[in-house]
Length: 117
Image (cartoon, rainbow, N blue to C red; front, side, top):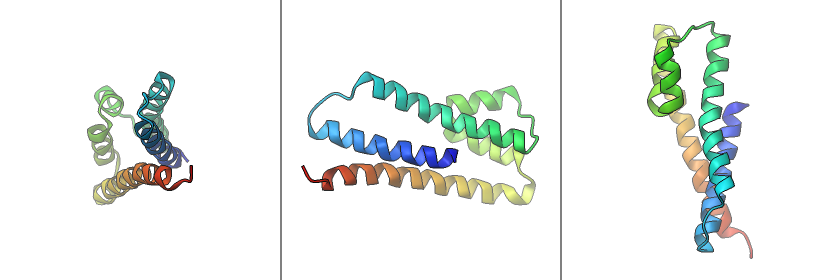
């Protein structure tokens, strides 16, 4: 469910970026703060739920890495929390999800441009 929320956030962000760029307006500060908060909170929340489900006690540096720099922190978590044969598939699925997030952002931009009005 959290991963779907990230995709929805990326779609909304793409539409918002396109709309405000097309109208030569500045994106409202509340949207910048909300989307920034959610784009940091949702990966962290997924990480906490996943580590609890797997009964994996992460070191403090890993929690900080997931919050501060998720593109490196989450693969590090996946590599340490999975059994040896499941590490590469887990990182591969993460890469696919990142690709889906980028496509959702582009789809949001595209959706704005094809909407009538």
